[in-house]
View 1 (cartoon, rainbow, N blue to C red):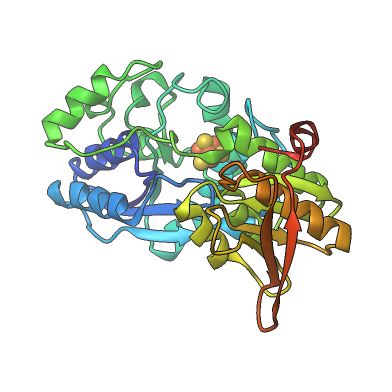
View 2 (spheres, rainbow, N blue to C red):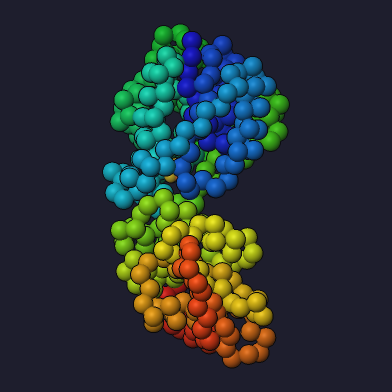
Length: 334
Ligand code: SF4
């Protein structure tokens, strides 16, 4: 008997998979990747797979990228957003729908998730937990082993595939039960789930809202949201200024054909900025002044800022002074 287990990288989903695996079910662990969960790194997932292996579960953790579908639902999620730009209910329904496809493909019989009743106000209250399986075509087939005894019986329990009495009744925001269970499984290295979803961050959400408002939601622009200070210079025109060496390098890496790169001459320490969109002469100068604002001028009133279009072609140098703070504040998104 096989079951697909959704693995977020956090402790609850690992515990749920281990718990059901220990009941003799062959677990197929899967992580659905979206571009906003920056803490679920490959090493973390490898660690997750090790935890699963420890319990004699199937060790091959599948990573399936659902970013394209996820971006589609971000524009107008049926169930709205949480406190920021996190469409948690639609996100989970999308993951369950994808899990259903995998379940059918791999001839698994049900899906396991690490959700805990009442742990998250928006996406884990009773009514939502009960409606999500229906909306994803998995009615009765989503087992939440950590809270199963507080929820109606599912098909795997009713059919005796898993024994209900071996499942748990965790509820609410406390974590003590999970910590005890982790210790009993010998799981030491873990993170709490969803802590790293950028969509729950107010600053990131502001930038994302701006992208959507300007009909610029695509993967290239989303990747750019993760680095630097963002400035809206016009419709379809943005400037992103690196905050440190790492971000400067990242902006150079993310630059595409047609983007502009701005940086100070070799005598001045300062950031790299990336400009995306159609820049007029005035906007090129404005971008130079914004870049200059973050340079170390060492008492000077102005400096040389160089800009060039990404790709072949020469660079241009301009002498500019820093933009005034009030004007800067009006342009800054986050
Ligand atoms: S916090 Fe982010 S990853 Fe988690 S359910 Fe919500 S939108 Fe999806």
